[in-house]
Length: 184
Image (tube, rainbow, N blue to C red; front, side, top):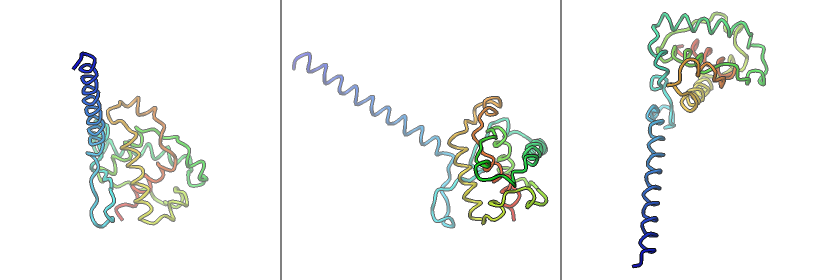
């Protein structure tokens, strides 16, 4: 074998090793993200479901006491209520006006299995929610939980998460409505 052939073989082997390592790194990243996803039971037709108890939130929010969490969620809800989303059309509900820090806090209420009472729901929530079945609402929440897992970096600080306006008025409406009904 001449020197050129040895060099070419060496480069080919090196490229193969590099390709295998890159493939393994991609697989590990995918596995880490899916570590928080739990497979469903038979009652949901063997689909992959997300359970809020398996989702991690920013460590600061995870450490909130029930009182702190309820108080902050109530303030977020008061802001929500002022805007009268009940009368919004589908386009307005689709506008992204809520940030990941707020949504993390509201979802944490669900994770901690805290009740959130909202009187006169028909005066607060849009008709699409009031007419949604339990299955519809569960499906909406699955979409929100998947979006959270895919787009929210829980290791970001409050400032960064407060600048991520990726949540629509519809998303926040669904979460609040879900909190008032999921235990029924």
